Image (cartoon, rainbow, N blue to C red):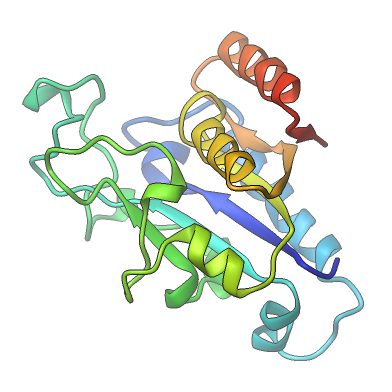
Amino acid sequence: MRNSALVVVDMLYDFIDGSLACQNADNAVKETLKQIDRLTKGQGGEEHEILDTFPILFIRDHHPADHCSFTCNGGTWPVHCVAGTHGGDIHEHLLPYVREELTFDKGCDSNLEQYSGFEGTNSAGQSLGEILELLDTTDVHVCGIATEFCVRNTCEDLLKAGFRVHLLKDCIAYVSHEGHLKALEEMASQGIVIE
């Protein structure tokens, strides 16, 4: 698994059981934990050592309360993932793998809608693409929520940036099953590997 990394997109409570709860979300979290076990198997040692050999990066929708995407502000979505709320938190079972420098927040500007993890930055202001380059990553495994929106946009941007993209289909949740299947088909046609 050398030169590989896992990108976990928006596994946040509002998308799991909150205001924008998606289909298959609980299962996606469980399957992601299984994948992490599989991908890090045989690497032994402390969790921080495992992360050094197989980086796990987190994307987080991180909105201000007056974000333009909220219906109350003229947007398309109910209020979700407001910074500092439970709904905006990463699922507790994934927290042991979260590192501040490998967590990228998007949607932080009230006037900007951002779906792709590529548009987020970590606390040092670095982008996902920059960090993956620093880690000498060639292959990126992607999981998260939701297939049709943030997962798809992140996968497509990773592909455009020259990474080999592997979408872990058992580890994703979606707004609608039909939209999920259509998005998978369209991503596969672009060269994203559906696993």
